[in-house]
Image (cartoon, rainbow, N blue to C red; front, side):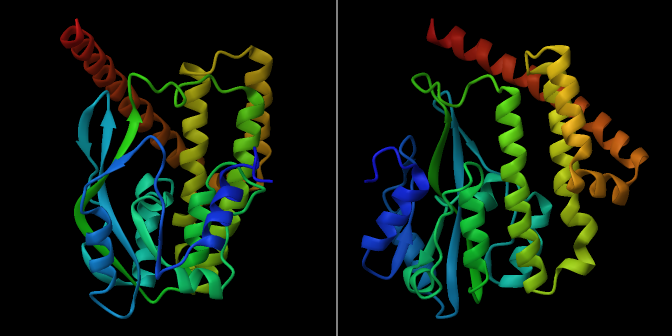
Length: 279
């Protein structure tokens, strides 16, 4: 039974029953442009070597549209080049999600690509990484065809207080995601020349967690101490800090804190304006 089996099981079941040439995904809270499927299929069929197409999108925050910045050069690009481009920000929605992409069903079935049900974070990205092993070229189009509803008045699921256990599970999941990322980099011969950049993933995670402990998590001092110790004992984080150096990490931490302070001020202003307009 699929009851309460989770999103990965549901997607795997859906793919097993799917027909046709292509597979696409969408999240329940979101919506698309009327010509979303047509444009994505047309882009895929414009070149026989294209095995995946990616479109741009809007973030929808309190019913306001915010266009995503361009992270890729548009056009038909080589798989290795696309994989290298993920190093700009591996955790970005643009690379990690499924809903701005279209896949060839044949590649999925022939190579037994499926969603892992043993991770609860980043399963979309792991699926995409596994799929990229078998692709030839990637087409990127600048059309904003998808509307990602990051936050709406009637949606509270994205706002919650993380517990220490949540963070521990997240780090375990990130270990698995990173293993898949490194595996893809090695299989394409890109790992050795880009190892330092690849491990920067953990610097970003580490700094964001330090900031969250100070400004977001309402934890006891003991919980904060425990989480700090767990992060500092993570082999990936230790290797990342060793590669980049303590001074470099400290500078990046300071810059991140300054940026987050600015973002917080802007978010508060948006809330004030939105509430004023709603009155």
